[in-house]
Image (cartoon, rainbow, N blue to C red; front, side):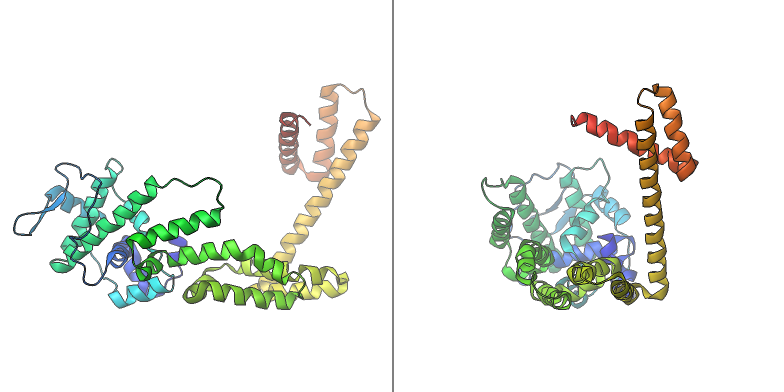
Length: 353
């Protein structure tokens, strides 16, 4: 979630400081025009003496301890407007559910979940007094009811993950309107749809040239993510995009000679990382290749020594192998190589190989 917030425009970051944005997310997550806040019950018991209640006149009674704690956790600051929240929630820049959980993690460690929820309600009531606060608290309880449904949900046996997720989506819409469900869970549901359909997509494009595979891949993502596509595309690390293009073009590239392939791979690297970045990647790959060759040489010389000295004592063998490793790899790398070999041997022994 924190990584995603880094992608939000600078104006939003002003509000995000100190998790202010998280509170506002809750407000929008729970906002529903026309709701009185009294339509939704909450089956979870509030902790005695630590509750937000209403008296006979409909006035809110907030325990002073809760109010003090809420002010400590959620500092004053500038707030997003409803229009801004709608915009960034609708395009996936704000993950409402993740933000709610991020906020809850800021509650004191010794507080119960119910007490933490009361802190959230107290803050909402102070920040949004009057009818708006009443609506928000009622809708917050509605979301808590949804969480209770999830806690009681038992995954049916014999069903695929996709079928189970469809059941969860239906349960969401039993409590939320379709519009609100999409606002709250839309990005997550789009990501699941992408995952569930990805193998089928690969099957459909497997015989296409690399360039067409890549073009179809972007079409597939746009079709699945819709309003979230720009956000998903912006968040994706350059290295992931680079690896994706190489993956879809791998078959075509492997048909080329080294003289033909290397310039094309270089062009792809420069596309995502620029000339300096491409140079750094090539330098790292050369270093990795050199290390691999040295380790292969080490392994070969070890095997040669062992074949030439089948009756060597353990201490003599260990000394000779270590000398080979230090000679080829250097002291530090030889020690790391030895630890790795010992670990691999332990794993083989445990597996009975």
